[in-house]
Length: 123
Picture 1: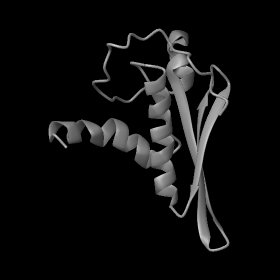
Picture 2: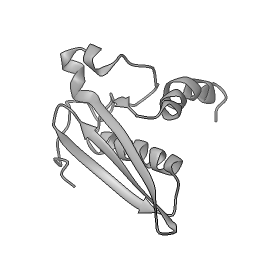
Picture 3: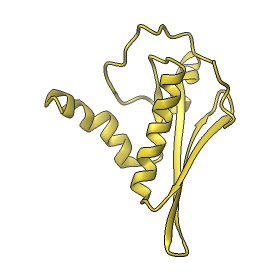
Picture 4: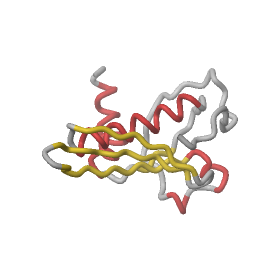
């Protein structure tokens, strides 16, 4: 993987992620917040009789990508893997802020829409 190890964005390790909310479009983010942005994308295709997927996370400010791949699972699983990869990056870098831009409407809606209700329901 080509993600620079040991880099962080100045967040305190004591800070905890407490909520998810809709964020503005990337080009509308203040310059000092663009460093927190990660974009996800996936692809899934049939090779022979087996599904193969690839998930990617891209940082536009650092111009680096990290990927994961697998087989035997669907595009929906790949979407979840991409989010998991972004969260792993954020955790590794001890970020308290993550501006996540998934390419999937259903993932975005789950993160900033349904998540709030799930938290209220203690799910």
